[in-house]
Length: 218
Image 1 (tube, rainbow, N blue to C red):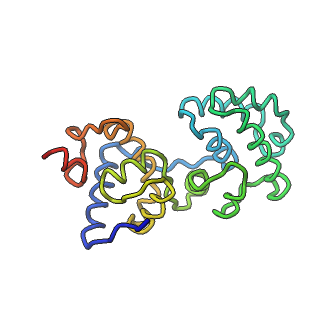
Image 2 (image 1 turned 120 degrees about the horizontal axis):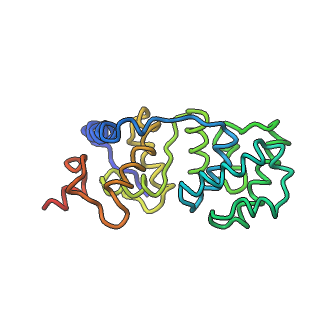
């Protein structure tokens, strides 16, 4: 996969889109930091699970097991019960128990702050690791979920087939200040306007800078 060639106006176009999205969604792209342990476990729970379900399940789990030490000792059957409502609770339960054990035994109960250490944890891929870096430690990281992947391709910023490819391509063209906000802004935009099935280009505030939007106008 080859990243898009960076033309002189790339930065201007990207900045126009990002600033317009920030104005449209009234600061909803701002990063709100959470407790690292809870961000990590909740992000693992969120895999293939809707946000509202993740929030409810995580709240119940942390009320019972608030830290790595307690979660590491949790019975698997109880964890699986608490995780019902998320996708594949029978897979996630042993994963999060093992994550908690590793944190307890190798990191004194703390969450590591490097990509390599995070990726070494069971069930943690690049998206989850970037979520932890960004939303727990405020480290600039491009969190590519389905919304960011879809919208970046529709805008014409990238031509990629997977979220991991999109992340690497965006690293080359997206100015670092926007790494902190791209996920939240595109999630909001993807839910409101740039829908998965059919984008509502006629209502899109960034249509004039969008490859798909300008094509749909013709």
